[in-house]
Image 1: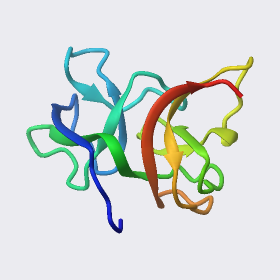
Image 2 (image 1 turned 90 degrees about the vertical axis):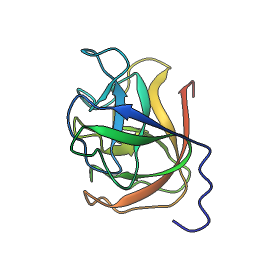
Image 3 (image 1 turned 60 degrees about the vertical axis):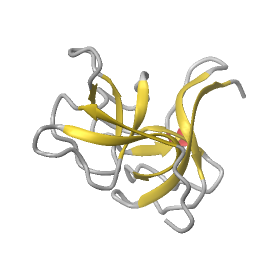
Image 4 (image 1 turned 180 degrees about the vertical axis):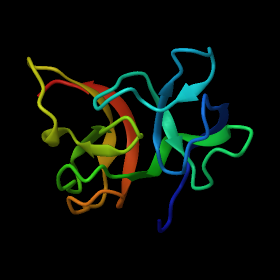
Length: 136
């Protein structure tokens, strides 16, 4: 990622060993830990696992704010400027347009894509981390 400027990285203990560039949420089992999300659209986003991934002792450096590379789930095209959210239980991301929502509130957004990737699983998309609730 060219000219990346990390804003906030912090080390967390993971409930399991997690590979790089995956989105993690607050652990529902161990206070202070992080874990993979339970499903698409999961809430309690914490950050994105750095390029190294969790080590054998399950410690991982997470990007909490700034620009992070995330793995796409391949569900649909992610276009630059799209809001992205957790796409599946492996911590991959997808465009919010690829997931149906009820009501006028979109929840679980983790940030905005700053490059485009095709509808192919495993591609890296640069995301400005900006967790929020968006009302269209």
